[in-house]
Amino acid sequence: MEVMIWVWLGAIVLFGIVEAVTAGLVSIWFAAGALAALLATLLQLNIWWQCGLFVAVSALTLVLTRPLIKKYQCGKVTPTNADRVLGEQARVTETIDNAVPSGAVYTDGKSWTARSSDGSVISKGSMVTVERIDGVKLWVSSPDT
Image 1 (cartoon, rainbow, N blue to C red):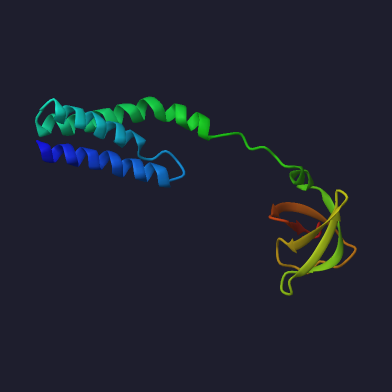
Image 2 (spheres, rainbow, N blue to C red; image 1 turned 90 degrees about the vertical axis):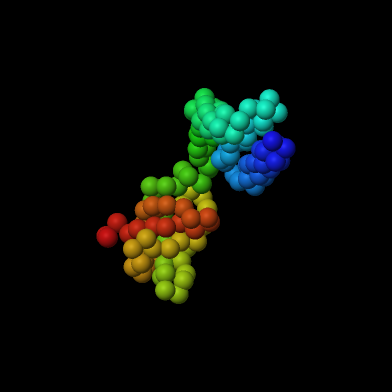
């Protein structure tokens, strides 16, 4: 019986450590199940009751709390000011050549480093459409392609 006390305490600690080092909630439910099993051990219930409580409490806490946790973890994406250039037209101020790599565009009052989405060379003075942002780099396409 004393061995099982250490087993369940170890499980609680292990699941707690896993929870602490991961970004999302992945093992807190198992820590709750191990706590229930530890209480069963202290009440001198046999190993089958301990394991059954571990599984039941883990599953129950998962079912009851997971939807609530997902609701709070799935925050809304807040667009940044940079997102407003997506889909906009930009003027190429430096020839865009992914092979070199070089290229710049001017849009929304700012100069941006730019790359061609399809890999084509786009000459200075051309008008392009902003497709996506990768860090501080705009990926653009020429209206001709």
